[in-house]
Amino acid sequence: MRGPGSVPLWNDINGAKTVSQLRVALYHLACRCQSLEAEIEAAMSHADLNHSDDAKSGGSLESHIRSLPIDSLRRNYETQLRDWAETDTAVRLAARRVLSEAEVEGDSFVVPSIEDIVELLVAIMVARRSSED
Image 1 (tube, helix red, strand yellow):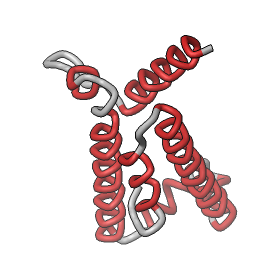
Image 2: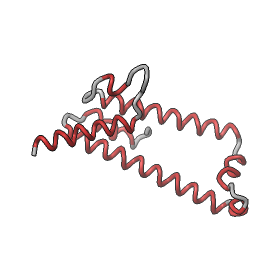
Image 3: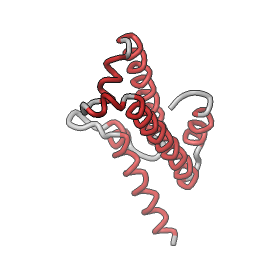
Image 4: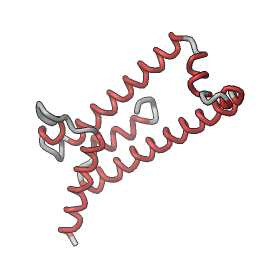
């Protein structure tokens, strides 16, 4: 995630001093991801509606993508890769405050996904909450 709306999000993740604060910050990150998914689904639905003739042939989104200039597709792809890389880096940096380097970066056999890291963080939070009760 990037852009002006992402600055407070990353500040909250990087500035979290307690597990509770980190949990809330990760929750907001998940909400942003869900919002992005909804926007993508809406765009895909819109593409389907705008290409109903293509939908009958079974490939409206594919036809729509093929109709776009290759430079536009490349720029879009590069932007999405850059956003992914920035998000991946920010989450791994924040997770290092709680997890070991091996848990965040993996080893020569496996590099954990962001989902794996979040699952590990949530498991730690749940365990801490259980021990506090």
